[in-house]
Amino acid sequence: MADPASFRAQPSGATGCLVLADGTVIWGRGFGAVGANVGEVCFNTAMTGYQEVMTDPSYAAQIVTFTFPHIGNVGANGEDVESRVEGAVGCIVREDVTEPSNFRSAERFVEWMTRNGKIGLAGVDTRALTRRIRMLGAPNAVIAHAPDGVFDLDALIERAAGWPGLEGMDLAVRVTRDKHEGWEGGYWTLGKGYGRAAFDAKPHVVAIDYGSKDNIFRNLVRAGARVTVVPAKTSFDEVMALKPDGVFLSNGPGDPAATGEYAVPVIKALLDADVPLFGICLGHQLLALAAGAKTIKMHQGHRGANHPVQRVGEGWGETSGLVEITSMNHGFAVDAATLPENVEQTHVSLFDGTNCGIAIKGKRAFAVQYHPEASPGPQDSFYLFEKFVGGLG
Image 1 (spheres, rainbow, N blue to C red):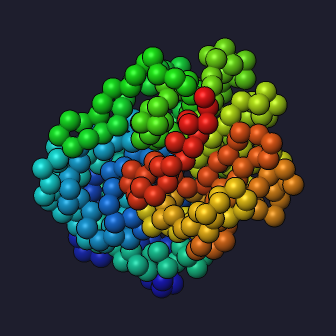
Image 2: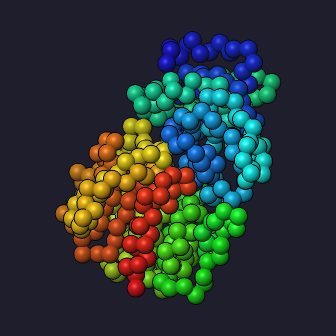
Image 3: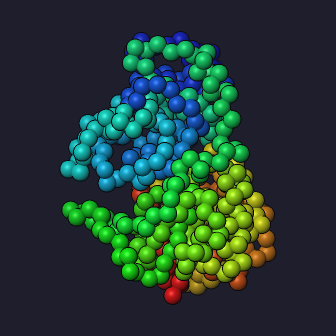
C-alpha cells in the first residue's frame, strides 16, 4: 500500500471510502446503506456464501473484505440469513456487485445491503488490502458511503482512530437473544426449504447463545436433539432448571476474555456438575478459559471456507492425522501453550499451527475453533454434532 497521504486526493466518481485509523484513505464506489460504520477490517477467502457471512453474528463490529471477485451473482434471499441480529457492518469488494443469476434469488444483493443498514465499497484493490492486513494486522476503520461524494475525512479519521477495537470488548451481549426459545427449525432441502424440529425428541440440548448461527441448531436437530436456546447471561441454575442432557456453547463475536467474565463461572459450574459440553468458536475459547487456559488476539485471524485442520492427540483411532477442510471465522485463539494437563489438544490448524480443538480429560466436554455447521463452507465436520448428541444417551 502507498503512503497514507497519497490516498487523500479523492478520484472522480468516488462515492465511498474506507478510512483507516492511521489516516489511510481508500476510495471506491459506495453501495448499500448510506452513512458511516466503524469496525475492524478483516478478509474472508470463501468463494460462496457472502450472505451467510454478512449475517454471521461473529462478524459484529467488523468490515469484511471479500477476496473472491464475484459478489452478488446469486442475489439474496430469506433462507440464507444466518441470524436476524447484528452481523458485519460492511463489506469491501473488487468488482461492482453483479446482477443475480440464480433461481433462489429474491432480491439484488445491493438492495439487501441497503435494507439491512450495511455499507459496501466496490472498486477496491482487495488483493492489496488483504496483503496489508496480512503484513500489518487487522486495522480499525470507518467505511462510508455518500451518493454525492462529500466526506469529512478528518472526522472519519478521528472516529476510526478513537474506536477502541475488539480486544477487551464483550459483543456477545449485543447479539444474544433476550429470552429462552424452543428451536423450531429443521434441516434445509432443495425445493422444500427448512423442515420442522421434533419437540418430543431426545436428548435435550440447551444451547447458550453468545451470537449463534442458525445452522448450528439445525445440525443439532439433524443429529437427533431437541434444542432450547437461552441468552448469553443465563445462570447455571437457570440452565439446570431446563433439565439438559447436554449444553452447547455457541459461536459469537468479541474478546472471549471479556465475555468470559460472566460466561466462565457458568461453564465451570457445568463442568463440576459433569454436564456434557460442546463448544464452537467463541464457545471453544470460553471452554478453554473455564479449564484454565488463556486466549490471545490473532494478527490477522482466520476467516474463510478452506482452512485445513488436522486431528491430533489420543482417541481418534484410525482417523488420527486425518485432515478436515473447515469453515472459520475468528480473530482470537486459544493459546495452546497455556493448556493445563487435564486438557488435550485435539485439532490444529495446518496454516499456522494454532489450536483448533480441545477435550477435557475425564469429562464429556470438547470444543472446536472452526465452524462444523458450515454455511458457508465444506461439510467435512458434521460428525461432531453426531459425536455430541450421540453420546448424550
